[in-house]
Image (tube, rainbow, N blue to C red; front, side, top):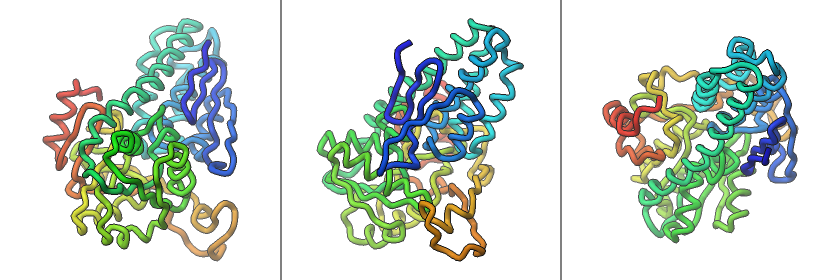
Length: 347
């Protein structure tokens, strides 16, 4: 079988390789996985991150579990693998969307089921890459010309099947000579903006300036930012959006300074079963991530820590949500429902 790959994920048919994003930008290190349990640990431990990439990885994790079962592979025997993968991270809906697609593909048993699941996982991977490019086409026109854009966390090829969501729009906008460059917030505590987004943009020769998260208001006040563009891990029926912690702050600042605040995400990120953002489970992570930076302690060992991985931006602060199907301006419940309906309501 030919290798199916994107910048952060390689599928060899009998094993999965993930680019260890914890080591970037200092080292490009690939790790190999051969079962669902280790794949779930890779998701939980941030070897791979970004909602679309998590979903793709989980799909391959199901295939690995089926390969181990061999002739005993069946939906019921695969349930423990589905459970361990679903428990890896609770907020990103793409994880559960991908697992649902894999469950729906469990219509056979034994070797035919393994082949069916492998084909479905590869399709999920390829679909995401294609979706990124369609999403970018819709998003470029939303960016005011001849200005910089501000982005948060990492939404590029490392976080998806390739090209990226918010960063995919930025890539396409730069290629179209619509923007002058990018300002990236560092994104504490995992520093995805500093370590990953700045690295990706530099690889593509796109001008990027890195700033500490707390500089955003000062940067916005300067007048050079045309739009804030971010990704999403879950979008509810009314347009409320869960994304990396610190996103809500940026939306409030953008509204105060009259800067468009744009969310870029695939349709698979929309969860119409949740009415609003209050229903989203927010992942709470280890205190050690805040007390230390790359293993170097920067705070008292016994200081209490509150470390939510995500926050929720209310729909009323969002100028537009861009999906591969089009643009939802000033999102609300009716507009979100209409968008899903016009796309064939894939959920």
